[in-house]
Amino acid sequence: MSSDDYVQVGTLIRRLQNIGSLLNPLNVVDHVRTLIGVLSPPPGNPESLDSMARAYTAAANAIKPIGADVAKLGTSKLPEAWKGGAAQEATKVIAATAHAVDRTVPAFTTASTALTTLATSIRDQQKKYKDLIKELGDAAHDATSIGGLPIPDPVGMGKLVGKVGTVINGLIEVYTASLNAADAAAASFADVKGQALAAAAVKGGLAADDAVVLADMKIKTLNGDGFDDGLLNTAQLKRAGEKLAALSPEDRAKFQGLLDNAKTDTQRAWLMKALAAGHGVDKLGPFADKIRDKDDKWLDEHLSLIDRGGTGEQYRGNTTLVEQLDPTTCGSTALIMAKAENDPLYALGLTEGDFHKNFEAEQKKVHDNTNTLWPEAAGTSPWGMTDWMNKNAGNGVEYEYRWADDTNQRDISPTMRDVSSAVDNGHQVPLLVGDNEPRHYVLAVGHSGDQIMIYDPSSGETKPIPRSDFLDGKLGDNTGGFKHVQGAVLPKG
Image 1 (cartoon, rainbow, N blue to C red):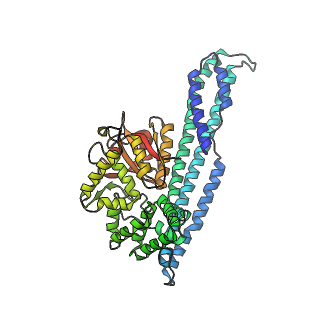
Image 2: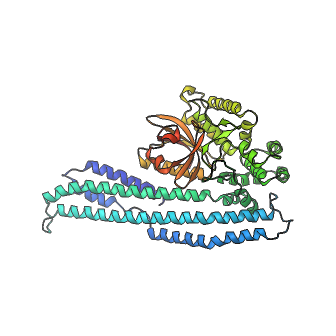
Image 3: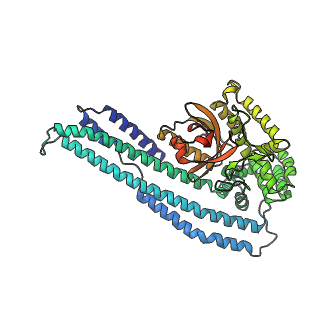
């Protein structure tokens, strides 16, 4: 379903609702004829979608044995002199390539399943549409003819009036179901796109050998897996290539020296992430010195503030829960977490020394900076959140604020789809939640299947939110006790 189709179907739903409110026995036949004239079946070609699904399945089956073959190659004797662009040994490049191939199989299977599900839904809704239109046409004919003659039938007219309301409700359900199916398919494909890490790195300009190794680097989460636990996300891999290509020959040589002098692949990956955040070689040199003798566990605990790969309470500085300072700093805390996800130097500045003291001071600082014209006792305004993200998030995109209404699924569903797509592409999304009024901020940081992972400043936890709870206003304990999504700070476009 294209974006134009999406707008068209939404317009049809509104027309149906308007026509339903205007119906009366005197002009019901004219309304019915108008209705039939402007309606069209739910868009989509089930046969084409099924064909594409079969193609993805065939591709997955063809690719499946390749990963094992590549892995076997990596265990055989290779020239020790062969090096990758970031001083990666050949065996590591081959192993990472095998993992990338292995990830492709479930991604293609997910795509095939999404296409098949969408095709089935479109086929079902198109049939329901056809049956409803026939039912309405037959009722209109009966109301305007007696014994085959074009004579109005008062009894048939009365039946038509009742029938129209039923059919209109049925058509609204058909179009709504088709939009829901399109939203679900879009979310699945956003998830698949987010798994194309190596491709994003190559698109940004990284050499293929560097791309597969960097895409294969993982955060060592203590809280289990299930969400994206790549050390660099999709957007960061792409920006790393772009930033590397933009360096002068002199700075490129200096940065390559930092990579060569790093003791582990994990340290090299953190250096690339810091480069993606926009830091110059002058800052990357001291950063490289600080992390050179550190193991992977230390790096994970000091260069990020949450374990993005899993869910649960988040601690830093041994015993400090990563939570908001007071009831007014949920927005400030969410903003800090968003920047720390993109910028390891920023995160290190907080985790070095007394994390508890540093974190509280940073919350106060961000709270002051985002509330120059807004009373701090009222928290942080949506426009204050948006402005800070644009100036400080460090992920190369421009944000805008969007109000949302989860009491209207056609309003909230595009928001859910865009949140999923944003986090799959490596962008954090502050969400404003509440009940009767906006009250609290959480931060969307991951997406897997039908769940969004959020960080909740009020509890210091990362939590999975089912898609249905997001859409139906049932967030509750997952977001500080507030049930409804009322707005989102989203990347433009």
